[in-house]
Amino acid sequence: MRRLVLFAAILAVVSVLSGVASASILAQGNYGGNEFEVVSAPSGGITWEDANTTAASMGGFLAVIPDAGTNLFVSDLVTTGDFNPTLGPWIGGYAPGTGDSNEPSQEHFQWGTTGPAINFSLLPSGIWGSSQPDNNAPGLPQGILFYPATITSFGYTWGDYHTQGEPQTGLGLPNSFVVELVPEPLSVVVWSLLGCLGITFGWWRKRVAA
Image (cartoon, rainbow, N blue to C red):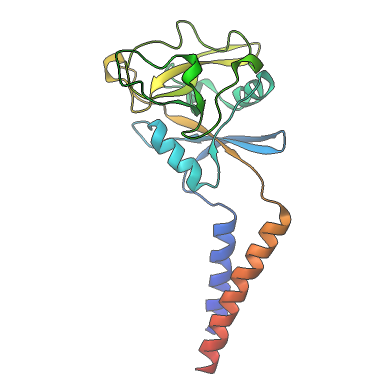
């Protein structure tokens, strides 16, 4: 019985360290040493904030796409079925609300809620889709997604969309998002595992001694 308890504890530790998540991964691939995963959203779509929280729970963050090469690679992971119907997956671009009658302009966009400003000089001049960014949700925070479902030579173009959705457009919410995972150094993983196993073994010894 004690061996079974110890084995179950070890399995739990390995499960946590491997970043197992309930989200369904539609496609994945490695670029520049980082893992990118296209993840399906629950029925009804997902807000940018919820996608951002889910990405963090998976041990990553919404994808940072700093250049044309990354954009093309991630676009190749995405299929037209990941659009709803023209709204593609959320990525990590974000702009806080302006609080007035205007949507954030290009210079307001950054990576994540606290990340660096997006350097658009490193991206193709046509990275924004037609009429993007627009002003459909004046003064409200915006997330970046792939828009529309028409691929170009550098992948999908971008659109801005209110992080909570824009009911007036009738488009609903995106049904997927892209997570980026930075691999932990092997030494960190090993020491974390050994530390957890040490705690588990200490608990087991106390049970035996009791």
